[in-house]
Image (cartoon, rainbow over all chains, first blue to last red; front, top):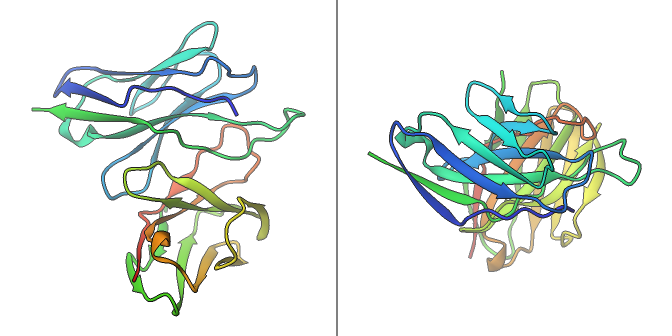
Length: 115
Length: 115
């Protein structure tokens, strides 16, 4: 599995953009980068995923560097409800590259949004 | 309906008890998952079912017995558990296990306490 490295914690002021970094220097060519978050006492929630291009949806933007060794999740206008643990995950593929299996969570970043 | 419903939300059991956790989804998903999450740790994969057949068992002790009676239901039967098995048990589903890019939908979890 490609492993990910995230800062253990980050702070952000409400209304400002939250930029959460993730390093995945051993990622392989067909492995996707996923972001999930887990608000206290709830199940993880899917945010976004990407392969090599930048992606945007109603929740966030995902910026992947050209060499794919790192990525940044951007919450453009953080609110108090965005306080959560954010997990950057590389989804493994089988040796033939035809199927994808386990979603393995790392330690994540605790994002605290302050008023 | 994009919900994964888990029951019960809380369960307290003794080490000699037999109990079950239940998970239900009506999104037509054909892959279902059990994850275990200890306090302040990331979720860890336990089992994966694909088209009602066990696909992945992450070397989970036999005191945990999964069952997938149909495509909408997933059970986790518990017997002779230890206090260290106390954790949040999360169920998830996805359209298929092998679909590249497919997201997982998680339930809110069942919090288990073993006395």
